[in-house]
Length: 311
Image 1 (cartoon, rainbow, N blue to C red):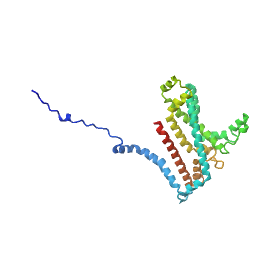
Image 2: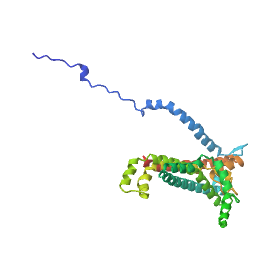
Image 3: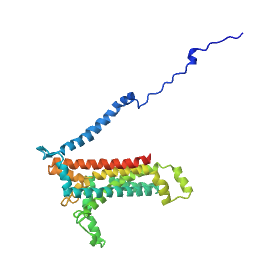
Image 4: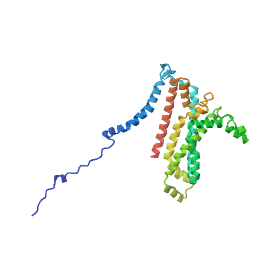
């Protein structure tokens, strides 16, 4: 006798799978708003609002006491201002000089010190990184002592019989701008060294040993193994150097105050002089807007071209 056993209904139906809620769903996005709010408020108050206030102020003829709406006249004055052309040229020199020198020197020093013994490597790194801990104003005061007409540099040149090379380093253009670029490089190279050393420590040791077994060494090891591995760090170092060079102020102000005759001014100094010394608030705001647009455009173009390559 055969007995038929009925299957329970719950076994005939497929079990229901409960999937976790995705963060891309509307409810997940709404739940993330409270966590993003502090950062959004912080950026809005400290970055977005001052920029919008500068844009609004640039539309007025403002002497600090009275205001008159002039539309885009301040930007028209910028185009015809010969000081602006010199400021743009000095800013370009600063960007190229303080971008190339600290990055190249920082990479070379980091690679060289990383191959030294632990004791000597620590000594070299400490000597190079120490100036980065000094403020820009203190760095400028030190280099003013070195570069003034009767300063240490000219005295050393006279002592070693190279008196023909002495010059007024801070009084003539373009020596004054180039001298300040050297001073800025002396201070900023330590930061590049720190970041490149972190990148060197992250390179897998097995990769270097395998390349060494295959016969790579010296320049071949650096060009084929080490530098490609440092590409993400290089992108960060160059990006930060680019932004810092565009907004350089303290070293230039302490060394020359943009002089003589405003020949060493950059856009940052032109903005400061017009706004706070000459009380051309509207015109100074127009310079600030121009500088902000250049910084944002340069950073955006650089990151847009470099970030996809390091993913």
